[in-house]
Image (cartoon, rainbow, N blue to C red; front, side):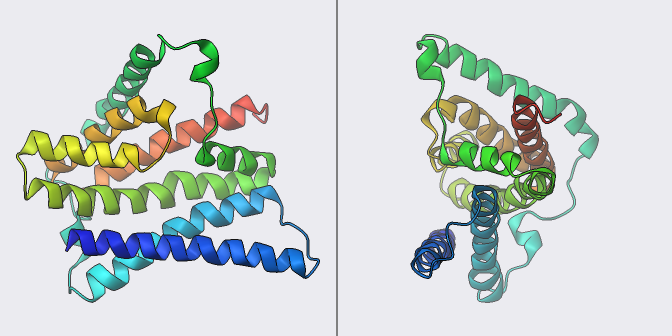
Length: 230
């Protein structure tokens, strides 16, 4: 079931990307010119997340008669107040692991832009409207969808086959790997494993959505500050 659901997620996301590429090619052929980078970034980030969510809704919830609660969208078994220490602890832990892994590298090798970073930079460069829309996308929509996919589908599938520690580690590794950002891998791996552990501990992915959203908002805010817009 999990593999089938993930397969449909990939198909929907890939299909959306193909449509966007074809649309841009057609626009150029018709003389419409290339749309602004900020608009492209917003469409790609929001569109891929929405496509993945549509795949889950249609092929997992609709056809298999599951509920959102079956994917972890339910009331946590423990108090969400634990997030007051868990959020800074996870983010700080991720930074420490990243520094320990990346410090041996030369300063130049520690720098690098990935597609997501470039997209966020384009959104910030687009002005206040795109900053607000980009923040909502990066800190609300993307965490919501990614937690459903990785903690609501991937984690339970691996936990059904492996013991807790192995399943959590593998699910966190999958989360880190699919971002395709080698230099951010230590941080993503740390956060991914922590989010999986939290999903198990709370018996809900809702606290993980909050942590994921705060993390993304902080990163987005850092880009805004770095651009001198605040």
